[in-house]
Length: 258
Length: 263
Ligand SMILES: Nc1ncnc2c1ncn2[C@@H]1O[C@H](COP(=O)(O)OP(=O)(O)OP(=O)(O)O)[C@@H](O)[C@H]1O
Ligand SMILES: [Mg+2]
Image (cartoon, rainbow over all chains, first blue to last red; front, side):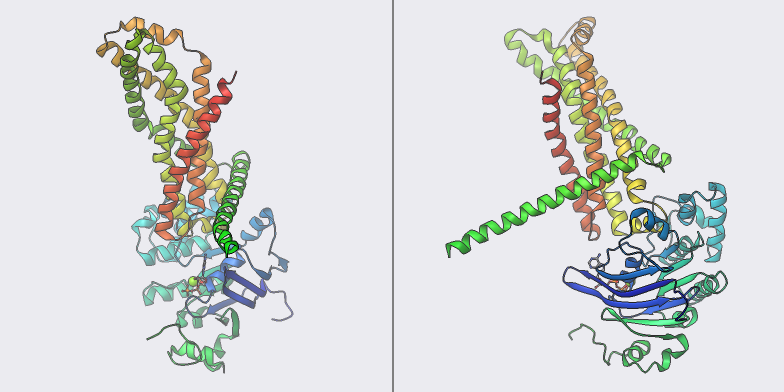
């Protein structure tokens, strides 16, 4: 793991909003074809971390490498080339509500002009089937879907162009347990069979255990623990223990006053 | 003590001034980037077409109504005014010149700012706060090119056409009042409308219209693009888009008129 070049390498990543420090020196490697899950409390900056990698937010300081190439501060052209490697499932789905579902799913393919509209539609219907949606859904508008269906369409959109690296921001939130497991299987399939690299965020530990090769925990702007999925239960880290067992008492203090 | 007071007064002024400079800088960069995306491929003909229909076709009823009443009231007002020095004969000229040079572009501009500029700010603003603009970035699509450039192109090209139609409707409004209410001879009225009209009058109005179309779409896109903070932020963006477009239309109208008719 350590000698091979990682797909994504974060070093000393900092990000603040005004005076509010969100990321305070994040170090993380994601290997080629590896699936890493980041866990951590709500509001600790997991989504912000991914948006920094995608350059949707400007980075304060630190280094982000993709395939060994430094991507902090690169120009628009290079950024477009790098972003082509990425697929992203947004926490809030972020579907284009002016387009029907199938065009949402096929958007990246159409934008890159890799296929004709008819072909793109077929690909979209296929991807929708993979996330458990029927072809009829393809002609609806996103506003006509339930929250869980929107999430699955967003997932289909993220994987439609067969990206090398996929970011899943809470892929199973808002889904029923059975559908959540279907999605877990899909993510496993994408990473194990198609060789894609995945960096996911989840609060769903059952899902994390299933999809992750390694799990990392983000706390107070730093990765405080990272290890193989099998080690999560005896990590020896009191923060991780408290988090995975969902205990209100422990070293992690919630900013709540009774 | 007095020193401290002076500081207290100057500080907010300085802060407002700096904020103003920052806004001007941001707007200039936004405009430059948007314009450069207008002329560099890829283009999005479907979206340009949809925006053209939105601006040019669906604004017709509102702009047409505005124009016809403007023409009618103009004829009526100039009649009552001009009758005092027996110049009633001039109302056909007054109507056509006012409409083509001034009222056509300005009234249409203000109506379209309220209709289209607001809708653009709301749509793009919603896309911003629901992360749809971020999603575009991750899907090999530049949002400036996909969202902003097509709207600017549509605004620049459709407003002159819209205003040309508004000119005709406005002049017709004046004609209706002149002939059916004030008892002018129809042929005579048309003759006078036509005789004093020069190409320059119409063209200057259409150039204005094109610039107003640019201002309206630019303000709609800019405020939408930079909106933040959920539904409330989108509401603010919409207000700013309409208010800033209206003020810019009226102020640039004066400058343009100076430029056109300075000689
Ligand atoms: N655009 C922004 N402007 C200002 N602050 C922001 C912005 N985006 C995020 N933050 C702040 O950064 C912190 C981290 O946000 P983030 O969305 O990364 O949390 P998260 O770890 O993904 O939480 P959750 O599990 O609830 O999704 C939050 O405290 C949030 O208030
Ligand atoms: Mg999040």
